[in-house]
Image 1: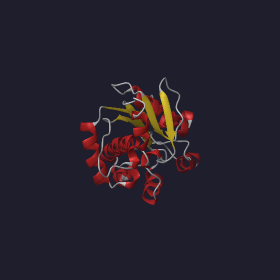
Image 2: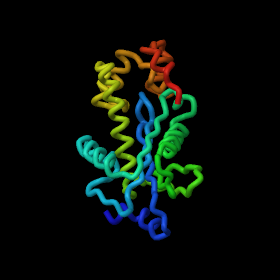
Image 3: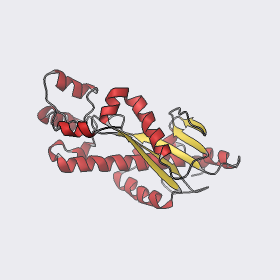
Image 4: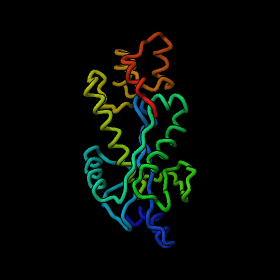
Length: 217
């Protein structure tokens, strides 16, 4: 736990207490938005076992999500649609989602710790490679973002159970690719991603175009 507060404690020593950890999830999936979260934790906050969301089971993520939603000083969530990802590319979309998450914080941070991504803000920013495993604040953001996005995929599963979004969460697993080939891409798929683009190039049709028409951000 001490190691996970290393970056935060360096800032505390400088009198900086409102530190936002920022991370995103969903670069790899073929469908849906990329989601980012910004989380400001109380000073010297500790939560045993919290780490990078990729290292946690779904049950653990849900457990930490509930605790963080209760304990955090402030939480902001940003999302950028598949339509926008196709327009600007996933790297830029991830950055936009992070900026949106920070802008939605009800409390303005004094410093931002972000997982790898350089951001241009009116407060100081420290990008940290593998930050979700090195900073508790970023780990918290990774959990909030991951659970938020997974819940979106579960909602999509309720509407289109034949795609099994509850199992693969939109990532290009063997099961997902089989479903994609069988039923075709939905309108909230990322058309520039190769498995989807290949189907469209071969004359595949998009299901439920109304979804994409409603996508704005």
